[in-house]
Image (cartoon, rainbow, N blue to C red; front, side):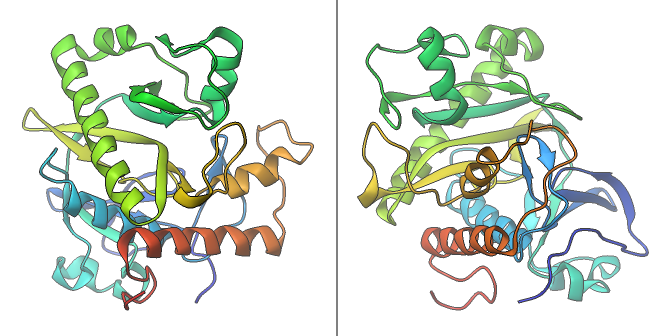
Amino acid sequence: MTAPLLDFTLDGLEHLSRGKVRDNFAVGDDLLLVASDRISAFDVVMNQGIESKGRVLTHVSKYWFEQLTDILPHHMITTDVGAMPDAVKRHAEVLEGRSMLCRRAEPLPVEFVVRGYLAGSGLKEYSKVGSICGVELPPGLVESSRFAEPILTPTTKAEEGHDEPMTFAQVEEALGAPLARAARDAAIGIFKAAHECAADRGLLLADTKFEFGLIEGDLVWIDEALTPDSSRYWAVDKWKEGEPQQPFDKQVLRNHLLSLDWDRNPPPPALSEEILAETSRRYLETARILTGVSAIDGGAA
């Protein structure tokens, strides 16, 4: 185990952009996505990192991309630094386990959030208006209720600040109806398949967000895949309607932040060693349960 890695200096690689978690570098015509140990909550990046988190995100994304590629092609080429160009290999000590070489895509300006259960911001909106992002839901649902069918509740992709909810009509206006519907169907199809697979391993996939892009005009799955950063996971055997669930994801950090006197705007509060360690433990445990192997050394779970 090593200290959290928050920033990268990679001589010989062109740095293209820095997101909340990932740094993107040009590698010829391809793209190198490097997952740091930075963590954000409520769209604010914390000043401290989560040990091994970047390895978990890469490990879990690789697993799901490979498992579900028949539903929609993805942008991943390899996560094996040894199979990457020499300009990348020279930084293997830093990059191994947390890097993904990908085909470049034109990202769609929408996050495709799919929900199978009532939780989080969806619960708050439903409690007020009986719907989420314009999707009407039956009355009488309670916290953690499972929907009859997964629903799409898309958002904008804000460069800074908070993402904003969108209706599907707004997505169709932004992307055009054919592309919007293809992305919606892909998101819900992936969610259903992942929900079944995760449940077989003991976790419920409650909700997640997808990012899609275009490569030569074809829709592809990009960025990350069903990670504890982008998804809400619960224990199958502990699920019970009407109450919050034990989190196997970022919610452990969100719950802590919600207990503080913080307005969800920068600067973020300092995090204790206890909450940092517990968040790391949950991420590693989730990766092990989902993939069957450790995100740290690839050894059998």
